[in-house]
Image 1 (spheres, rainbow, N blue to C red):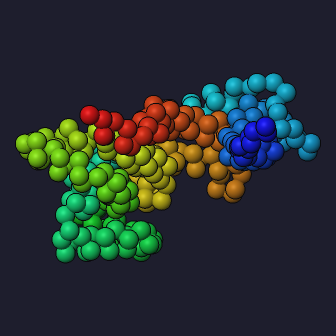
Image 2: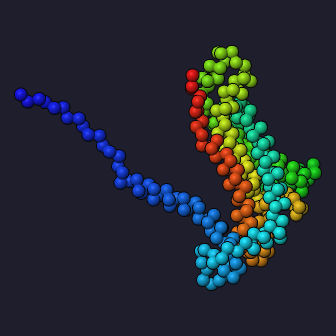
Image 3: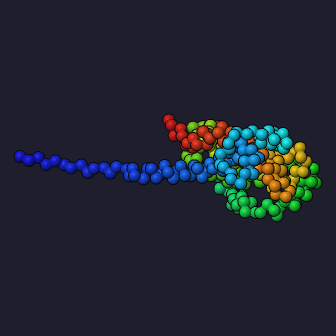
Length: 288
């Protein structure tokens, strides 16, 4: 007696041949992104003779730190970095405090002002800054905020607020309204719902918005060039521009060293918050 044996269809194994190409593409992308920083690093350690050599090499023959010392001493780099840090931190705090309640209202309350606010946000992103710099300069001069870091903070706040508000309202809209309704049914007040439900889930959004605002303020050059003339109040981008001479003669070694030092605060800030940035937005939201 023969017994019929049911044949189980074999499951297809993943197409593993494509895996090396994925790693190769990822490696190429990382090299593409990291090459400017690597070029900056190798250039900063080169001697003037190596930089002016007709047969330049990618790697320096010796690790010369004179460019770092010259950049710090001659350009007063530490003082300029302090000015940039002061402006960037205050701008980030103010923009976050203003955009948080505004983004919640924009995402949750369906009023006629929502369309007006959305139009203002989109219009502000396409408006060329060169058209507003003259009236902006005259207004700030009237209220005594030219050559003043608080004037620069005010301008950066107005400049960063629309996009930060747009980013944050997207994160608020991603939080299910049912969670807030469940909190209300349990008797929680509006303040308690915002503090215990909305804010913890909004953490990655707040981190992303803060990171965008900080880096935008840290790297901004145009407004600082027009509004700050006092050398003691110059921010880091203005100080870096001084390494390019009036006749286009670039002090390449010192410029690379100064640019490398100027990159460190942004990298450190990102390293501090990247765990919060990449954590799951809804993790723990539906636990009993």
